[in-house]
Length: 323
Image 1 (cartoon, rainbow, N blue to C red):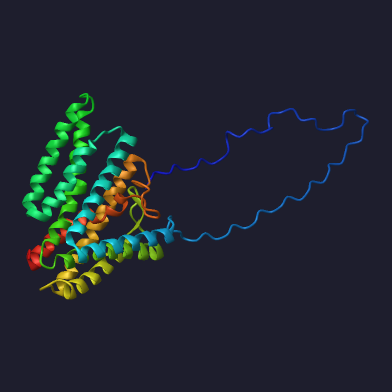
Image 2 (cartoon, rainbow, N blue to C red):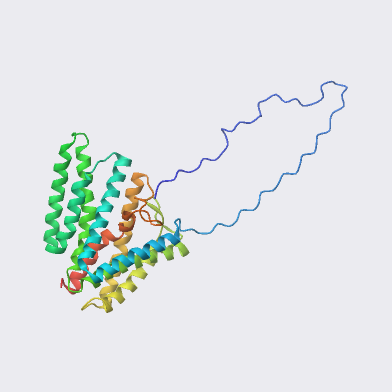
């Protein structure tokens, strides 16, 4: 969220007539004093209407876009896995474009987009085809490509540009690769669906409870809209959804494992949201983009998903294995 400066209170700098010469009293001593004219009654301001809580966005557009994205994701996930990998790759490339564009606009940091986009898409594919080892190799090669690509420009700002580039490579495509790793299991579609459901439910619980009952700020300097009550809602909703998902969707899963995963998802999703809020506050922007009406940009939807993907992947591997 952008930092909105407080509106200064009017007064002090306003012009007034207290130092001006006043023509009070009669012009001649024998002139009778004039009776002051009665002032017209001033209209009373209408009472202010009570303000209602607002979500701050076009809720109808947000719901419509969310449903449309969900339909595309679910259809590609359960029909052709390769198409879903393509969806992830496209989201990664668009997210990198948004992030690098905002960095250049607001901070003058020119992280090279071409090697990031090519390497990011390759990272997702390598994770699906070659597993974790392939993802790490692709990450290393992408970082190297960023260092070399930036050498074609003047050396001024080289260090900050390549540092931002390596950060972007890790933050967006590398974390997204863990979704592809989940998909490689025999019940990969169910694992990815569990990951998506728990993250969405966590965000929904935080919004619903925080909007209705939120009074105590969670991190006012980073995200003033988040409350401790909202965090409790995120944990409660995610743990309940986790118990159901592990019991009925995941092979060899147990409800108590879902409680653990749900708690971890609520924590990682909240930290991810706060992390991107920190980036946006540093950049002085509200959203990373405008591609999704009611949501902002792709990165504004990936903020809680990206750090949650490795958490869910790791816990599922620990609880039910890799296949």
